[in-house]
Image (cartoon, rainbow, N blue to C red):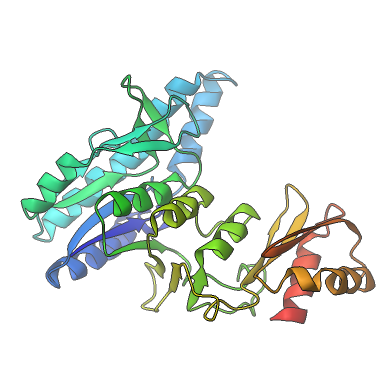
Length: 318
């Protein structure tokens, strides 16, 4: 049974983090599963490369930026393969183009248009653990592209769908999906499961847990995802299409400080719009506009009041 395991930058930042992540892959491999690994660039490597390029020119070529930034994930893939082989497991690293991820002709935020995973299937059939550089692909004409911030999540979901994987596991430095960012709202609760539609709305509303395009792809292909911690042995959160009976009225709340918005997500959110607008006003949070969809209500608040609005609504609802 094939599973895809994706590790974010914080899970690969230094030998101890890399070793711990490699052990999670080895655990699956020793249980008789066939893991395929997707990796991000370690730590702040991407930001450092952006700064290095901009120290030369403030507007580097998008094509050359993609060629530069793709090296961060390729480095992580090679190091993960080296670590797995060190611990006795056969492994082979692949860049995005070697993995067969074909994208549109767009640099910086390309979308995957098709999969050609023959080399990955060959590696899996040979008993190897493929380690794929996330965040990147190649155009039909052979240029390297990147998928935008968080694009390694999209790589993982795309490969899970292409290989008909049993599950796509996204490992990060948080314990799952919470009702709000626990760094901003300490009393936020971890969710055992969340509907893909609600996860997409949270991602589009500012949540950094999963890349929005990866959630769209999971919805498109019916791919099950589990968000897990690479630091703690906790059950994490299942992210899948839920029946209406299992889907809770409220899933969570997020903010986007750049757009000055706070978004409450869940099929029961729209009916609370007016009451929550009044609650924010009573709490001294100026609400400039309200937008309602079928599973969310989004408040645009005065700049600087986003965190106050987030905490006020979470306390009232969760």
